[in-house]
Amino acid sequence: MLDLTLALIARPSVTPDDLGCQALIAERLRRAGFVCEHLRYGEVDNLWAVHGDGEGPTLVLLGHTDVVPSGPVDAWSSDPYLPEIRDGVLYGRGAADMKGSVAAFVVALEDFVAAHPQHRGRVALLLTSDEEGDAIDGVRRVADTFRERGERIDWCVTGEPSSTAKLGDLLRVGRRGTLSATLKVIGVQGHVAYPDKARNPIHQAMPALSELAARRWDEGYETFPPTSLQISNIHAGTGANNVIPGELQVLFNLRYNPSWNAERLEQQCEDVLRAHGLQYELRWFRGGEPFYTPEGPLRAAAREVLAQFSGGVPEESTGGGTSDARFIAPLGAQCIEIGPVNASIHKVDENVLVSDLEALPDLYRALIERLLV
Image (tube, helix red, strand yellow):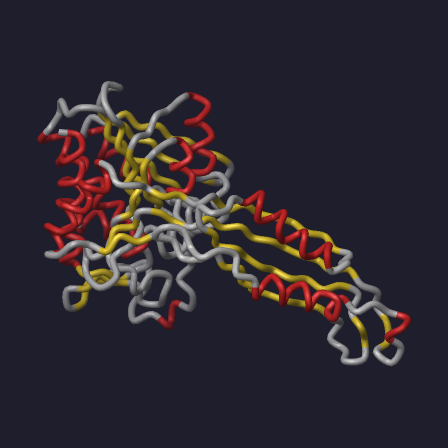
C-alpha cells in the first residue's frame, strides 16, 4: 500500500497529465485478472478496469490520478513530489487528494479478487487525469461513452478525502450541482465629467447584482443546504480614475440542491438581468447537476463499515464542493464518497497519516465484500 502511494506521488501528474500513473496501475490489475481499457480523449488519460462477468450488480471505485499544482516549492517543508514520512505522517502533493485512496483501491481490489475470484457481479476501477482541471475529457466524457454503449453501473464509491477529524467519521451521500457564469455588461465609455454622454455599466449592474446576491433561492432540500449564488470576480475600467468604463465583467457561481436544475437557474438569473434593463452578454458553464443517494444497500453497507473502522456512526453529509460522481450518478448509479481526512488538501505540505493509509485497503475491501459476496 505504502510503496504504491509513494510511487504515485513521485509522478508530478499535475492536471491533466497522468505521467504513467494509470499504466502502472493497469499493469498490476491485469496481473490480478482485470480487463483494462485505456480511454484517452484529448490530453486526458482515463482507465477502466473490470473484473467479473455481467451477472449481478456492478460496483465501481472512482478516482483520479491528477493533482493540483504544488505552488511555491520552497514553501513546502520537503519537495512535494519526493514523498517523505515524518513522525508517522506522509507528506507530498496528492497524498490525501487522492493518490492515497487510488493506491488503496488497487490493493483492495487485488486482495478482494484473490480471495473471491468467483464473486457475483462486476467490480471495476475508473480513473481519470482530468478531475482537478476542466473535467471535460475525463469522467464526463467517459460517462458519455458508457451511455452510448449501454454500460451499467449500480453502485459507485469515490475515494475523495471526505473524513473530517479521523478516518471514517463522515460518509458523503450527495453533492450540490455547480453552475458558473461569465457576464459582460455593456455600457458606453466616456469622461467622468460628462456622464450624460456615457453609460456606466458598473452603476447599471449594481442593482441587478445586489438582487441576485441577496436572493434566498430556497430553504434547502432534505440534507442539502440552501442554494447559494456567490460573485467571485468583478472587473472594469481602464486604470484611470477619470474614465467611465465601456464594459463590466463579472464571474459568479451557483451551488444548488435538487430543488433546481441548471436550465431553471439560468432562466431565473437572466430574468433579473433583463428586468433591470441591462445590455449584456452571458456565457454559462454547467459543471454538473446535484445528486443524492437515498437509503439502500450501498448506504447501509458503508455505514456499517465506517462504524467499524471509526468506532462510531459516521455523519452522513451532502456538503463540500463537487466530485466526478456527478457524472456517474446520471447513469443510474447510487454514489457515495469515502476517503481520508481532508484537512490538508490543496495546501502546502499536503499530508495523510500513514496509519490511515494502511487502514484504507481493508476498509474498501470490507465494503466490496458486503456488496458482492
